[in-house]
Each structure stands twice: as structure tokens, then as C-alpha cells.
Length: 334
Image (tube, rainbow, N blue to C red; front, side, top):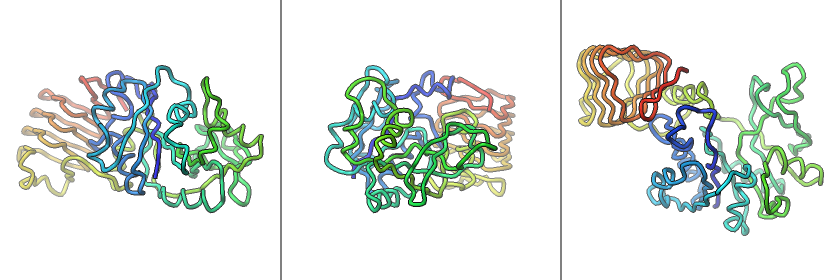
């Protein structure tokens, strides 16, 4: 089956982390977020993928390549200028003219059953479907209003909790029939939520809302990015981790010859340490900690509730708490 990953955005909400790294390559549990998405798509038999690119496109292509290493085929379209998410889909139009297809944003961490979404979309003969999930605080989202059959009848943009008519929000995962391109103009900036879906409603065309349970997180902000990393450590979502997961019960890494941890290191929490890293004497790792591959944590360092990207060196005596240490030692507080 075919799917598209929307990966052209700049990721400004993750500044300064995305100054030198495109958002789809931001790591969750030491895997790029786009790798998690590709693995989920592959699990549900989406093996023919299109990816639209703009910001630091070459870095994403260098990382993912043609998809062979992930068991999928990947084609790229590079946009000279951003044209909205529906405009990004339009740039890949020629790849999606023959069958039902799925579109997913590149800043999502989720374990949703994509097979279920496709089945619901086809069973109810929708032109377009939006995967919906429930949230406690709707004030930061647009909510969808659905009828008894699940079809969307309207939207409410970032309502106050007391005024919200629904707690169902769009997850950034969509399913379309090829006929959808008849309703996307050939040029200009065009968005799904702002332009396309209101147009479908105005024309009384079948826009389905599919309520789905499971883990879902938009990693596009600093707090949600860290929360998502920590959720993986605490098994709130089952996705691949790169490295060795340790906890306060044991720091025995005798089976991990490529990871060097001094016997005096103290671990009190859930800690993921990437391959080929070195943790020197009298280091304290507290709470939820992710350390990327090829990193060195020197003696007498304390790291608490933080994410350290790969290839970092933490100098002796540092106290790092509630911090992300990113590419080229760019740091920001959670």
C-alpha cells in the first residue's frame, strides 16, 4: 500500500534544536522520529512511500536513502517553497492516482492501528478520513464535530474547555481516495484543516472522522519532545530503542561490549545509553535520561531528567537537569 510522510516543515517550534537538524531527524529514544514512522507504516503493510522535503532535504535523504534498509521503497519530492500540507501532497500527486492512500505528519510518535483506519475508511466509503483521538485539554487544538455515523459535520478551533463541543482532535493522519486531487487547486498554498476539509463539508462530500485509541504525541514542541522520549523509556508506547536500557536495579552491562560504564556509576530511574558511549566514574543518572550514541560523560557528572543527543561530551563535574543537549552542543531547558 501507499503512504505519504509530510516532512517539509522547518520545525520552528523546536528551535534551537532544529537550527542544524531537520525535524524529521530529531531523535526519540535514539532513533530519528521519521524512522519510527517508517517502521509503523511498514508494520501495517505501507511499503511504497513518498516524502516531501524542503528544509535540509539532503540530510533526510542521506539518512533514509531509498528505504531499502527499512524494507520499504521511498521516493522524494523537494519543494522549492512551502505550500501547506495539502500543497505538499499535491507535489506528490503523480504517485497517488491509482489507489487509496494514507498521509501522516513527520512529527508524530504513535502506535495507532493504521490497518483499522484503512478498513473503516473503505467500509464507510469516505472520500477523505481523519484519524481522531480524545484529549483532556482541547484549548490547544481544533476539535472535530461528528454525527452518529462518524462523519465530520464541522470543526471548532481551539475552544475554551467550557465552550468545547467535542474532545476529539485531528491526529495529523489522513486517508484519501485519489479523487481528492480534484478538490486541491493546482497552485498556491493550501492546507488540509484550513482549506480542504471545509471545502469538502461545503460540498457535502463524505469526510469521515475515525476515533482511534492508542498512544499519540505531537513531538513538535520542546516539552512534548521530552515527554515522548520519557514515555518510551517507561513503556507507555512500544517502539524501538537504540542502545541499552538500564534502571536503578542494575547497571550490569557485561553483555554490551561496546558500552563502557564505570562500576561507580549510580542509576536511579530509567536510563537509555546509546552504543559506543562512555560513562566515567562517579556519574549519577537520575530519573528519565536518554544519552545518544558515541557520547562521553566524564567523571562526577549528574544528569537528571534530560535528553543528550549523540556525539556529545559532558565535561567533569557538570550538573545537567531538565535539559536537552542537542546537535553541536545546542542546549535548551525543558
